[in-house]
Image 1: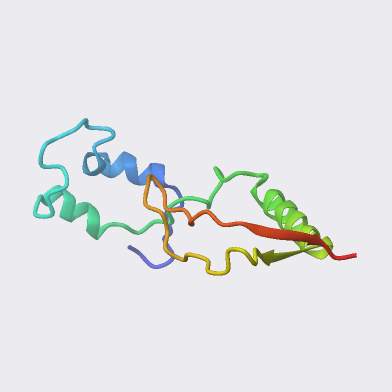
Image 2 (image 1 turned 180 degrees about the vertical axis):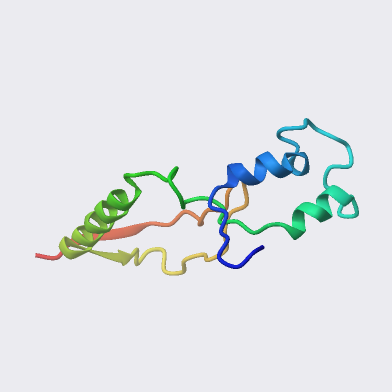
Length: 113
């Protein structure tokens, strides 16, 4: 990658190396075999920022993050969150599934003022 050259979009990478991920060229049986030359060639050229940069980013993302911060901080200003005394030990092991998620738990929310 030349000095000062930054690739900002993932779409550009897919257009150049679409055969690696199989989206543009269709499925192939040996697609993810590490010894395949087209896989090795594309893995050497992974010089791009994945997503979230460039002109195709969400314009409202910055505002949404700030609104959520204000919402959560206001919630914690007005209420305090405590563990349930009837269920003292919280499980920190995640539940397996399509995505990982925490174990179910109960909490007590009390008004501060």
